[in-house]
Amino acid sequence: MSLALPSAGRRVAAAVVTTALLVPLAACGSDNGTRKDTRNKTGTSATDSPEADLTVLAAASLTDVFKTAGAAYEKAHPGTKLTFSFAGSQELAAQVRQGAPADALVTADTKTMDALKTDTGAATVIAKNRLVIATGEGNPKKVQGLKDLADTGLKVVLAAPEVPVGRYSQKILDAQKISVNPVSQEPNVRAVLSKVELGEADAGLVYKTDAATATGKVDAIEIPDAQNAIAEYPAATLKTSENAEAAEAFVKWLSSPEARKIFTDAEFQQP
Image (tube, rainbow, N blue to C red):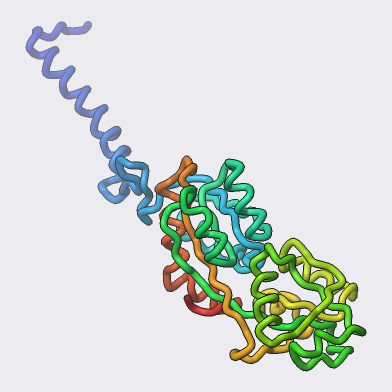
């Protein structure tokens, strides 16, 4: 036989049952007070970098180093994915002017970046580079320096004059009053390097860092400082970016000690 509880007793019993159900739920939500939310009201992670998928337009000579830098950035900033689009700086500039969807830009010269001031945020130089003469492995033609490039029996390839490395190349050749008749003028530095690697050219002017990526395939002949040119790599956000805060965080990181070590390990110079 069951006994009916007075109404006051029923209310007390219901309160006890409700409290018993809520305690486990509260404990689960707080993880016993040890779990912390890693995001704040603005969507920023614990690393103070917003989650986003970023597209970065970058000079061809940054191909290898940015693969390393991108992996390091993604590891340190969970939730951020980087996609790089590599090409000659002049091609990147054309893409920006045509409104290509992207978040940041890194060119191989300040001239190209300066011409895009209305499309970018403030630019910061993140690294520098220098030129070398790339020859076939073992330097079969015995190229010693810039003057040898004037030899009409030597097949020399250069980047086109509108490409940063092409301008740097012409600048140092003109300074030494050396006339070169290239067998071809390529759209970016990687195309110049490829021609030498494949034996389609005996020599070409490339960045030191590009020659370093082809060790065992090409030799790099150093050019003295007094005859050389220094390339600068400015980075900036794009004003059309839909991920402005995340893009700014990445561009800022490119000047961090971690990023600079990655660049110096790849033989780039400090800015």
